[in-house]
Length: 337
Image (cartoon, rainbow, N blue to C red; front, side):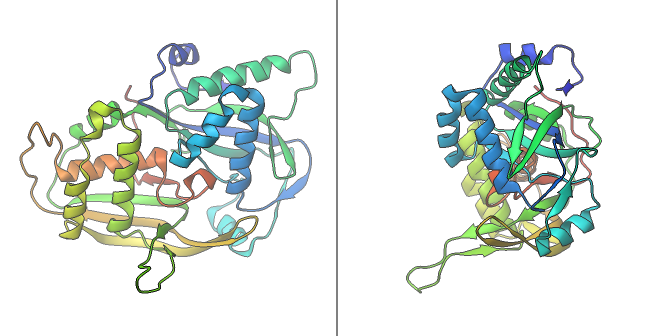
């Protein structure tokens, strides 16, 4: 079953009107073919499996997608097990392999940051399904040594998980402009997967590079500025202004008002990764300056816009390998196209 949105015939419509300005967040519901075990944090394996599937289903674009990963044109989650969050965190920290079995379903989240990727995925999926008609249904994806069938694709914005939907860059701007602004605006972010920030240290002092494991404003929002300017269409790229955002942060216009963060660590195939999970509330302080044709959004609106973008791009390092899955806590998503 493919549940792309609540609109009828959306697949054909999206293919016909594909544009680079669209953003998508999908859940793939998977069922393993046989009993086995898998690493509790499998983001690296899911990343490889997704690229392998595209290589088989659409070889003509596989190379460009792989090259595009340098700009992170998509994100992948780790395989999500039907277990309580605390149990998953413990398994990830201890790297205790977990059972997978055909009577259960598991999910993977994908986000597409380039509009053409969704029609490519949709078309490839249709051809994949047609290839299985009249014969034994082939495995959809192999994650590590485990083969999975695809049961459902979910992209409807009202999915109870809160991790699906689609929008456009213009739609995100429209949502932010419609938000009611208050003094000391509160912004709460949920970092649902292990998150960390790669930092370049001073070579002059002989310090090595390191990973920062706290979501300080100067780590979170400048990285999202870069993503907006890489991905947004040219007519919207100027709406987020790096100098203004960085100055606002430097002047402590953004401060942490509250947090519920926990250190976390996971094991990749060949290395260990430290980071954090949890929630962090930021207070956007000060009065809004008047907007101008050169600066159509206030700096606080720009911060809120970046937080909306984070739902699709993730935050921090290795977002294409299961890390940095982020969303605004308590925000009801709408579809803007």
